[in-house]
Image 1: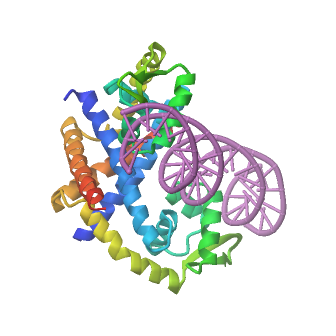
Image 2 (image 1 turned 135 degrees about the horizontal axis):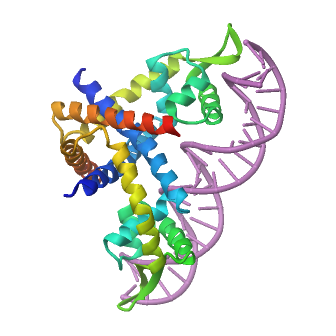
Image 3 (image 1 turned 60 degrees about the vertical axis):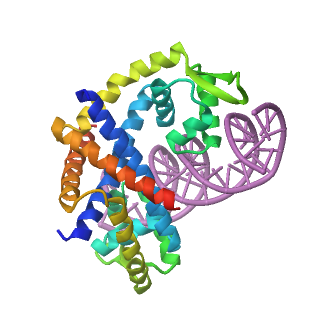
Length: 148
Length: 148
DNA sequence: TATTGTTATACTCTATAACTATA
DNA sequence: TATAGTTATAGAGTATAACAATA
């Protein structure tokens, strides 16, 4: 395969795999009564509670307007708390509720199983190699965005 | 990194890279006055003209209803022809017009540059390895879908 | 002035489903 | 009955932009 075609094939396959994997993960979320965006919020808060909505928007690669609606729904569903920041009264800091933690604990095994099934064709070694290569692609994306 | 976490990290990074790469490729398409879906149709027809709309829907992983609207717009824009199949009067077979071929020729260099920039952190060897690993993930997706 | 969050609006992508013409 | 395509409708995800409150 010529050089250019190899890169194109890798990127096209990457996109197609991601599209199909996203549908699989969305189906997992739906079985737990959640949208994929809500699961991503839960995972993000699990990784560090107390973030602001703006922080969350940046991590999830969406605008603050979208985050606002999503967290409002999740607060109404009792999955998270929005507490006013005492040092900056404009900001809300986000925390998981007990119900949110339970939801996350309930979905994580299914998440893990789905990941294992998707990656069953790769050895542990290869999964590590895949991850490290993707991180390098992500660095290229950072560079691209910095230019723009 | 423990085994489960490695798989999860690989999949999460895969999704994030795909989301961001998709935005880059959509920006490329937009510079040429096309949507990403339209570029995908052009690329698919380039790979084999004469496919039906149903074929196209399966290859692009969308429903025939969506393909119908997309190809109608592209026909109106003069990018492709829909010719009745002489052997099956229900079906349309799709062909690129000269204008469609020109559009594709115009966008391909930009496409290639974008792919090269995204993959600049990987050697040619690694790009091949990435591609082959993604193909194996796609086979796992085939298996998953066959079950369902 | 700049930033956090809110709200309204609109566009894209996608799915479902009812419909027609044909096989 | 089943299939190719059409059309209408609805939902999710996203962006832009104007706005209020606060920094």
